[in-house]
Length: 278
Image (spheres, helix red, strand yellow):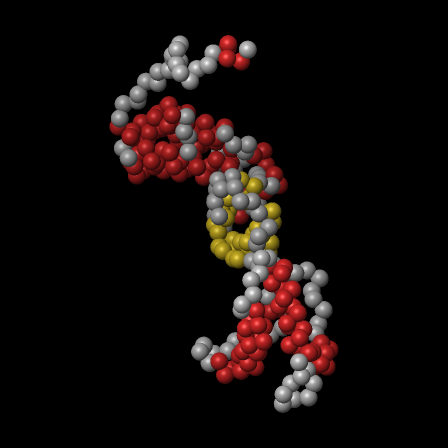
């Protein structure tokens, strides 16, 4: 920020108020001549408070010094104002930086949202600059992708130019390979993976979720994963978190309950019937 505005910052030492005696004296003057003067007044809006502070501030700046000639306003006009620089054309934008590795779906995750980068950078580590409105990705100092920031968790922001030709995933990953891997576990797992892939506009956006589901077989075994997928399909829930929860709570070992269609009673206090609206 200091570089943006063309100024230098010289921090004072911790617990050494004499390092910035002028600042401490200025704070004391404001407390005495502005805050103390307003301490018994009640304000009902920020604008009203600011107007009162502005009035007292102007009065303080016009008040003559006791040991020096002139006023604070005159010293500002003579010393500070001629040295001031014009403000930059653009305001300073606060940004945070993080490192992110590109997944096989050529997206990086930022606060639960996924942003695409050129597919040639799969498995590379990038520097990500995060501001309120933009996401910028850098590789070895060069910007490789820029997106408007989105705040929907679990969603994707994808630039078509970042995708491999003919929607083929670099590194031999493809929907067919994921489906074949799932088929080795069982038909329910294969059906669930195909459902997850079909739910996305671009199948590559589902690779991360599919890999997470299939890797649950290593932790819980293929038989349990197949049973969990069967239960998830019956419940209409196809997310990684749902299947992981089924396995973690051992719900995959329970028999599937048959869903019976509930019939509405013919007579009930809360059923008005068609005659009510006549």
